[in-house]
Image 1 (cartoon, helix red, strand yellow):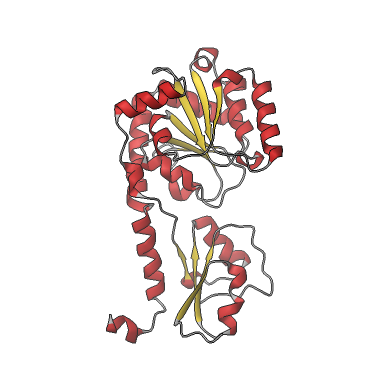
Image 2: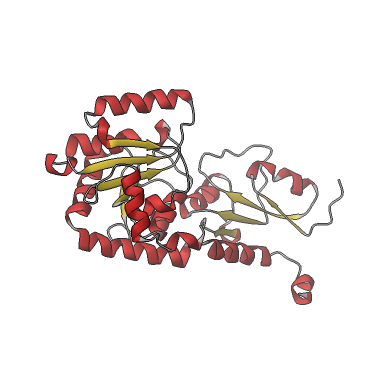
Length: 290
């Protein structure tokens, strides 16, 4: 079909051959580092990478040019920065049978093996001191992706020895849960960016995540949150213990993380930076007109 568009944004890099065939200026977005060059991929006029890791990947493996590649991190709604009331927190804890002095370590996302939930469970059961384990509840907010994931998770829970302290809550608005979590953990073996970490940070929750894509964009380790190696339950346990026994210092770190998220990872910031990329290739006559 004939297109009158001046610029086309192909959200999938594998669709870039279409604007290429139309001889249009075009943009594409690289979300992950599993893409492989093939005949469908054509280097765009401008490329958006959602993290510095995906930018490096696009340049190294897809042949993107440094000067035409921009990092535009994902953003979330400012609503995450507005806390729920103390009364709402008490009601949510009571509804889920949590005591006020319990330590709530939370996760939000799909319940799949790729999310590394076994790493988090082992960090608590195998490496943390008994006096802390007695007060910890692991709260997983999310749905099973496959029935095999349900079987896997239930098996993990049964074998953990703390099944009464492991809770799977069907997915719902995660905002209230971020506000009652003492710590948010994303233990995934692979991530494109890890947007839930931004939600948690913006909610003022101390955030710990694996060193997958997006980690260093989001967090300066030990200053705005914490980063640990994929699969490393021992290191994760040490971080969790430090956060729980140092509430004042970890609170300061969470506050810095919140400020970082508010400055860099909102929808407004993402939209503004995306428009800046568009403006690099929009015809000057159009820019002058508007």
